[in-house]
Image (tube, rainbow, N blue to C red; front, side, top):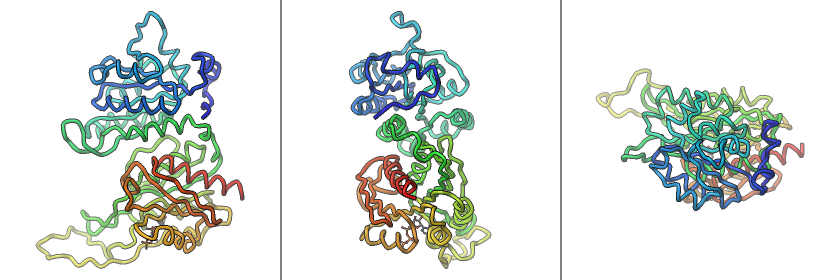
Length: 419
Ligand code: CTP
């Protein structure tokens, strides 16, 4: 692992080697005052295990949720909470200059608001404003707060400034409520930070135009009901984000409203027909097209214009096939475009995926066995086999969807450089 190039002349002059006496990448781990603060302990430990120098910075209120002693034992240097430290009179500039990445997990509503508005009234916010390093924020809060326009506006502001947002997940929240707002999986946060630190990150897809589809399509039955599937869109979004991180110009055609990191242009769609129109339009002339979406194979024939009522009896659903978008992309492709498909299977995985690889005219087919534990729909992890029309096969054992995305993109880069 090597360090990211520092984005400003100041930070490139004052690198971790000269100021810490080691060559480890330097991560400031900011912890703000949310119930998920205990999960930052796991993030700290995993980063240290991965060979990262971790400087924990807790807000004064975060200490109510998790003790400094724990981070003192696990981090690479003592916890800091205050600007008023006699041994180091300007701790925020030291931390800001040394950092290769600053990651804030959990990031509370209050922390996001202060950071987005440029307020700097404690060590963590002054460090955030004093750094030119990549900043990653991992929000965690109750669903109502996550949905509040003030929070979303602050996130949009941060995103527009290049801050990487790792959105929260759906799940059980403090107090037993269920909804979106739970801190992203610590393993996924660590992977994202390691991905940013990794030497591969710059910039092997620079100048490459990539179009990715993600999510399950929704086919209307009537104005209130749809036919859909279990796809979360996480794998397609991870591919789009990984491609953007590696320098590509990325467009993402998605059915989900998942937040997307800076640098990805998003087209939101609903049905297979919408997705077909967007993919054929955006895919024409793209260097790489990735169909990670779970497109419905059938849709109701003739959508009822008004709500169907029980009192009208059980409706008879007549289905018709949807367009096969990937096959159409395969027919329209030029020889220098790389086309990637996905095959989610439960049995005869390799055979079925190979048949789709050939039948749809693609270069790479990413096959996964969605009946295996931790694989496929709605998980943060995946395990895949990347089959190539050139006969090469890559096995990716169970890991985060971001690492799977990078493995797929490694194959794409190899194909691009062979053309
Ligand atoms: N796909 C598509 N349009 C469809 C169906 C699938 O573009 N109407 C794409 C998917 O995005 C994926 C690939 O084709 O990249 C394989 O999808 P999959 O659902 O595994 O296979 P199907 O072709 O639908 O075949 P089957 O349902 O028989 O497995």
